[in-house]
Structure formats: structure tokens, C-alpha cells
Image (cartoon, rainbow, N blue to C red; front, side, top):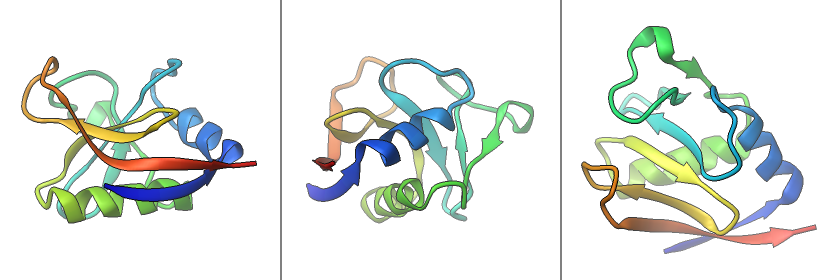
Length: 105
């Protein structure tokens, strides 16, 4: 698991990019072409439900690129206060953590 330094401001900026703001976790998706978007719901998000976020937040781009390194096909990933995880194929699958946050002030 990779450790990423992040400020509280960067974490809040990431959360504000969501389509449906919620407390935790923030939910995003990326494809193998490095197109990333905020997800509107669990499962397939068609083009009309996508809010493209690539380039909106350098820290989120860093996280998305690391996810593609870990899982080249892309997919959904989730950002919370502790770090970033994904789930394999189903909503209730165990969390697969690939980034741990080191919060800086």
C-alpha cells in the first residue's frame, strides 16, 4: 500500500467534486484512457450521469493514476479520511486499500 501526503483542504476539495455529496466515502471512477469522473450511483454510470473531474484537482489525479497502476482496467474507487480503496465486482465485497493518507495540516 502506498502512503500519500494530503492536506485537509485537498481532502475537502476532493469531496466537493462529487455528484451526490455525502460524508464518506467520496466515490469516483476512471477508465484505462485516464478519463475520470464522479459517480452518480453504484454500478454503471452512463455518459449523462458522469461529471468529469480530470484536471480539477491535482491530488485526485494523483490518486486516480495510482489506481490505474494497481488496477489497469480502472473502475470505481472510494476516498475517505483514512485513504483510498476499491471493491472487486460487488458492493459488499471487502475493501481493497491501495492508498493510506498521511494528513498534513
